[in-house]
Image (cartoon, rainbow, N blue to C red; front, side, top):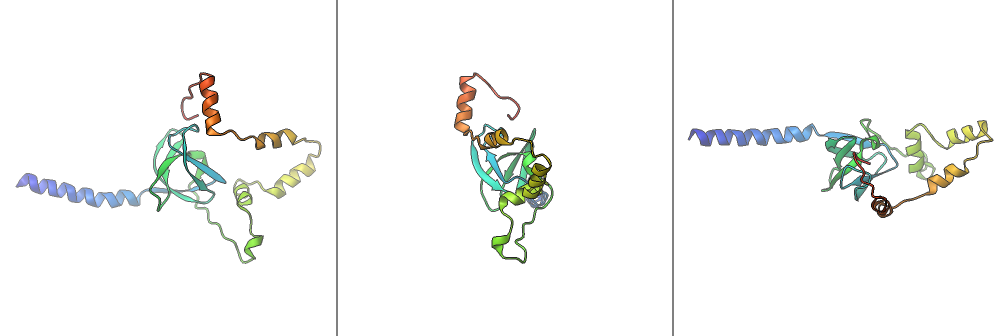
Length: 163
């Protein structure tokens, strides 16, 4: 009888602790334009879903510089680099003006980082002799996860520590 009461008490305590633990779950905001959430804590992990600037995500765990996250209302979890997240709550509002005059998601993401088209134009005006051609070319390069995997395999490379 004592064992039955003890078991019942433990089950009740676990039932009460579960919601308390869930309530303490950390919610963070995505601070990059588009974040790729991966199946493993590595930039080479398969992309399982994406998050956008300002999305709120729940953090379930951490491994090195990676956070295991999920989106409220979605039954999927994955890993994202911690640099893509912030503790600040990001709130996006269109404002009183016509929505067509609101900032684009690119502008919002850049402004969140302290950089926008106006800052770029001012920098270019102060530095007219700087050639941005190669920077523009580098920004245009896109490498698929499959190409990266093939490169690593052909080169006999084995990434460590969340590369």
